[in-house]
Length: 90
Image (spheres, rainbow, N blue to C red):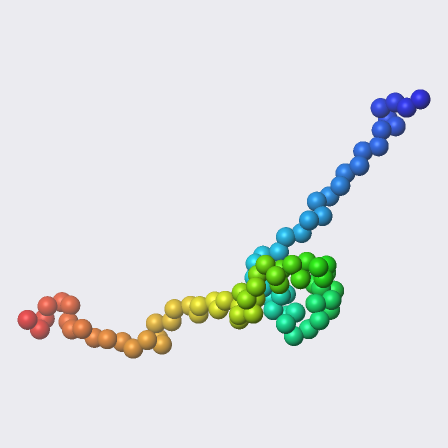
């Protein structure tokens, strides 16, 4: 007879992985110069998924990845002197 101790519980982990848009675009852009199967194997994704991303992302992946602006550096901009703000020249 089976009792409560004989029950088997199966826990399934969430196997769906998610990728940020930047990673998807980078992988799709890589498929423009290399075979899809090689890129898929390198990143551990199914080739069909890369083909789907190519279709849905379209030309966005062909463009270069978005540039991150460099931090503002005051020393690279010219200094402009407008006058004495203390009122000494009046």
